[in-house]
Amino acid sequence: MIDLSSRLLLNLEPWRTANSWRIAFSGGLDSTVLLHLLAHLAKIHSLPALSALHVHHGLQTVADAWPQHCQSVCDALGVPLQVVRVQVQPGASLERAARDARYGAFIDATRVNDVLLTAQHRDDQAETLLFRLLRGAGVRGLSGMPCERALGQGHLLRPLLDVTRAELEAYAAEHQLSWIEDPSNEDRQFSRNYLRHQVFPVLTERWPQAHSTMARSAAHLREAQGLLDELALIDLTDAGNPSDFDWLGLRSLELASLAKLSDARQRNVLSYWLKTRTRLPDSDHWSGWENLRDATGDARPIWRLADGELHRAGGRIWWLSGAWLRTPPEVGRWADPTLPLSLLDNGRLTLTGQLPDGPLHIRYREGGEIMILPERGHRDLKRLLNERGVPLFARGRLPLLYRGEQLLAVAGLRGLDGSVPDGWNLHWWPPGEDQGLS
Image 1 (cartoon, rainbow, N blue to C red):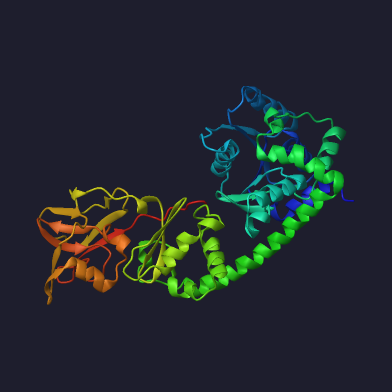
Image 2 (cartoon, one colour):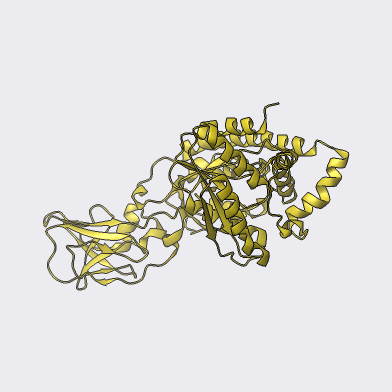
């Protein structure tokens, strides 16, 4: 059998051109073994710059001593250590809140072409599979923890997923390593601890290979999820054709293309499309999608999700989040139209060409606006927006340029955004799409 050090190096081979390898170092057994392995590999191999990151959650008094322990271990191995203190937000699940805070610190620390290494192992993978199975997870959830995924501007790797806890314990004993024993790991009110201490001992007594076989099942499910993702990409090719309003900077899909698919394929492609934007609903809450899809033509359905909303307009579904869910406040006078104007929660404006005379103001729609067009005379703004098919959710955000009570231009709409004879244009850069979970 290949020794643990060689297996680790083999797993990390594709990532040896990274700028740096940073180890998520809790001070516990698993991360201590990973740190020790890499510190010794770095002495005999050319590896990226190695460092460690300890996240201090501040949830236990005893944890106040852990940064010092981690520092002494890193000093002995010649590995730089960064200690980050985080604030864990209160919530229904302390485990989830602590994880969110921890991964927030990981994201902040990971730059372009950096790799963050975590020490989850095969036993953790089996526990993850059972935990998610009991929560009713689908194929994506049951595929377990991936060996690699994007994190911040870099990547997160789990190079020990093919290693057992027993192997890590044997390595630690052989090299006489010391590590932190977190008292909370014995608290069986936490679901994972309950599985580890109460459930898995019973399972392994009857099925000694339970950890390995469950980890193998997770690998099969990852393969199945990969096929589902490939199918989603095929379906997105059909549904993701361009819109006349792509300049809004929002993601959208053609509803008619989605409606041709079976219900299962609709859920699959939407899950793939939304997974980096929001936490997805469980299977009991997809009725929001059905209501959005099946609404009558004059309805304004909205599917509200954890981190944004799906709107339906112009035969498409649109993802809105961040500033797009906030009503921009009134603007008022544009003091110096030669300079760009920043709009709170609504991007920015510029005027180019020969500027129109008089004090200029920026307003938003209130209803009843009239615009004078060459060769067409007075026209109701609502009708003009209808003619162009402007999505309803965008209409109240379109910046309107006024001189006194005269509506001069509507930003973003060709033919309404300036004056050809006078040679000026009103340009609008809408607020950027919130990147959500990506």
